[in-house]
Image 1: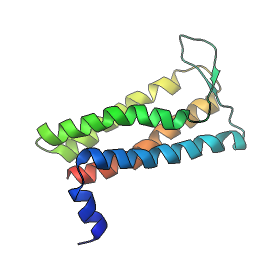
Image 2 (image 1 turned 60 degrees about the vertical axis):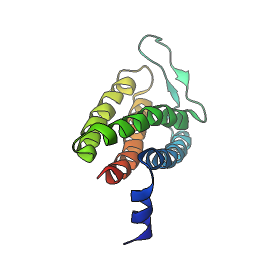
Image 3 (image 1 turned 45 degrees about the horizontal axis):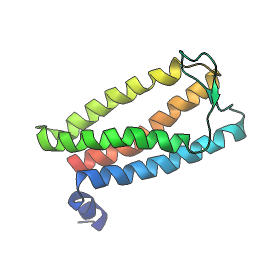
Amino acid sequence: MDTTVTARRTLPVWAVSVLALLVAAVVTELYGLLLPLVGIPMLVGNILEGVPSPITVGMFAMGCAFAGFWGTILAVLIARFARRPARTYVVTTSILVAVSLLSPLTGVGPLSTRIALCVAHLIAAAIVIPVVARRLA
């Protein structure tokens, strides 16, 4: 058996989730830093504010950390209580990712920025969900 697979199965669920989250935070932060270079303005706000605010360095990673904290708790609870933890985790987190897209889609600011934020959500999910699901399987 591959040592990577063995290590992944022996690490606690929370550790696998945190490691995947760290990778997602780095990748999405780099993605966020590249957006202005391709002409996407880094301004967004919520519908209640009405005025967009700048997206600063570190905000993509901070968003991953916030979502990842709750996602890690969710993964641990699912691992403990679900009959089919991998499937339960994938279904639950996929629904939560879809819900998370509502914030940028209904936000205030340039459409290109809001779409780029949705892509960042999907990038983070594409990194974290499969890794944690494999650990739960």
